[in-house]
Image (tube, rainbow, N blue to C red; front, side):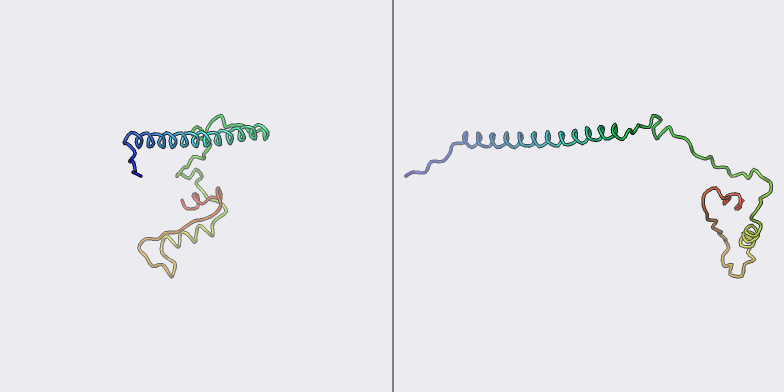
Length: 121
């Protein structure tokens, strides 16, 4: 029996069919992913309504409730930290025994709004 070789047209048709199948599978996969995202968004909207959550009408970029920084000490006297004030002055002037550098740096740490900046000034 003689073996017949497929003609070029048959090979091209088969290749076109496989390409169309791959394109169709990719389309269905994309549709499925979009449907998953859509379902997730619908669930989020439903939960938002259920929990009675509201959106921020101002948005993050317009929110300006920040304390302004001021490097000027408004008061001429600083009350309540005389001991710490003296220690910082000693450190800065260099009267501490273990002072070793030309440049002194004194970290002042603590909770917010307790007067670190005022004490440093």
